[in-house]
Length: 313
Image (tube, rainbow, N blue to C red; front, side):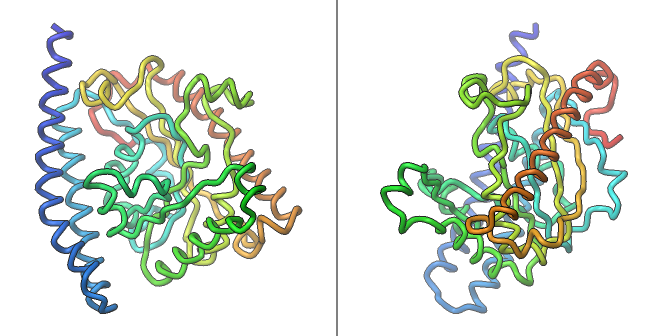
């Protein structure tokens, strides 16, 4: 019976997600194109506000599909104990571990209404993603080009480009509440990547601190808090299709709120070794605590089966 249920759930999930995405994109694209074609600053700001509302509509419909179709239980830990509570009128730096393409969807649908609209630091190649690449651009998602050390040695003129992108983001959202999302691991967790890195963590890849430093240097004084998000899935196979087929019995999102050290907004990661070491140590401490929290959540897993579908303990 369960083998028959999973393909049926997958079909319904895909059809509903595709259907409502097509609806919101049909509303989104005309406004986005007008924003692109009409170079009047006030008009573009007006279009940007409309696009954000359309984006929120898409997120809330995704949540309705996930809660209404999937048997998965979504458990949110720590939200009620946050002090101060989350505020959609304040800007946040949100950092999460990264295991699956499911992660952004979980993060957006579970934090909707509690924080401002999300902007992910996206890889530059995603701008060519059909339909969604242009949407990311219209919603002011910052695109960053990652360069290898070998590339920078051959092309030193590319050094600092990510920092310049972060600086422009800081200027753009100087007076507009936003949630800047960063995946410090830089890529999705896989066993092969874990082995190749010789990661000191069991459930995590090594965090990359450069992106964190660039964001804090550009927006540090404008950010209300650092929201540390840990997403945990049941052990075993994990893919977007397993998720949409209802084959994950539960998903846990754990929230921790941290103050951003004052001096993190003023340092220069590239030229100040002491500052670089401080932010690296701070990030390692966050990651060590995240690792311990994942172990605790996995030990709690048997309790999730008796809880309601979406709960904030």
